[in-house]
Amino acid sequence: METKSIDYNSVLNIFLERWSIEKIESMTLNQYVDIRNKDTFCQWVENRTKAVGNINSAQGSIKFGIYKRYNPKIIPNKYKNNPRYKHDSKYSWFSKYGENCEKAFDNVKKDLKKIIEFSLSGKFELIDEITLPNLFKWKVAYLYSNNRLVFIFKRDVLIEIAKHFDSTVDSEAEYSKLYSIIVENKPIHKTIAEYTNELWDKFKPAKIESKKANNKPKRRERKETSKTKNTSDSNRKGSEPSIVTHKHDKIQEALRKKLIDKFGITAVNMEKNFIDIKLELPNEIVFYEVKSSSYASECIKEALGQVLLYLHDYKSNKIKKIVVVGNYRPNEDEIKYINFIKENIQIPFDYEFMNIPV
Image (tube, rainbow, N blue to C red; front, side, top):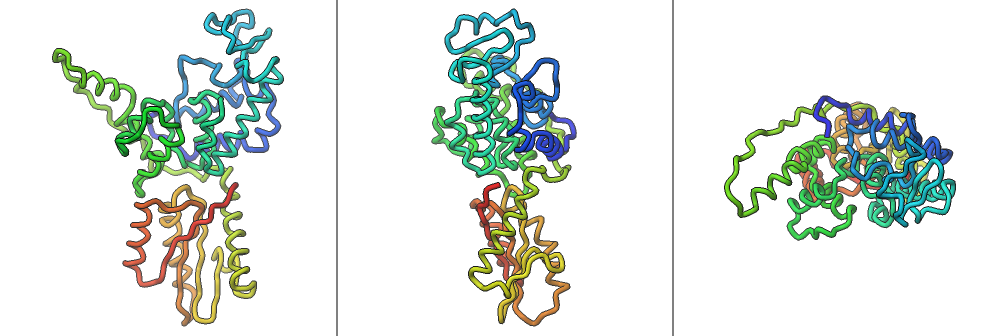
């Protein structure tokens, strides 16, 4: 895990600009994986986005499902006579993906597109069923998740973190279950980068091994006294990843249709005086501010100051109400935050979520 100052959102944004859904659709085998080419999809996932999760491992490049050998004549001994793998004059791949490299890549790409689709829609439990190796597939899932996962991918670390929050966690639990427990416990005042770095600093492999060693009833050994301080500047925020920039418009349009169906088209105004949606009823005006951030609390924090200014500028004797609209259901901590706002501001306030797929 990187500890220097990093603009994590910019890392994501640059990746998602390079590997949009459209580019994945047209991606060729040489664009997916190659040698001495730093612009392949696999190079981006493994090395060029290392700031948001290191997936280098002893497993090597086979974790991509298919890879091009640096020396075509040399097939690693651990793969050579293993029926799980197939090879040709350039590539090696998992046998389950097909008889030749073209068919193998076609099937790997299908799995990759499923991972992206399920991640964008928040159906992380379906990613468990995809057979690409876990390190790689969950790094891809994070990159397209709109920060709905932590960027930690080592299973033993995820298990330790999940058990910290829920002692009943089974060591055989699926990745999606581990991530669900971890993300559900994210403090509302922390970004996903701040939260991830805090968890990594506390549960990284060296700490786990130290904990295991300390639990062994052996002779006393010298205690580990050094401490690693997280010096990352996670408060720096870049622009929102480009793949979610259209989500705001989709949420807004879905909300507009919902309100028109209920109150009629004349009551609903969209994008007037910078207000996302204004619902004007005989005795009440409701200002809807739409946000596409990853968490209900972040949507509220981004929207409140903005919409309060709209209310200040809008002259009317009608009752005014604020509704912040996001794409995700609030967790228990966020519900408390919403109730705190309701209890402490005089203007009627609420949060509404609309689960709109990208």
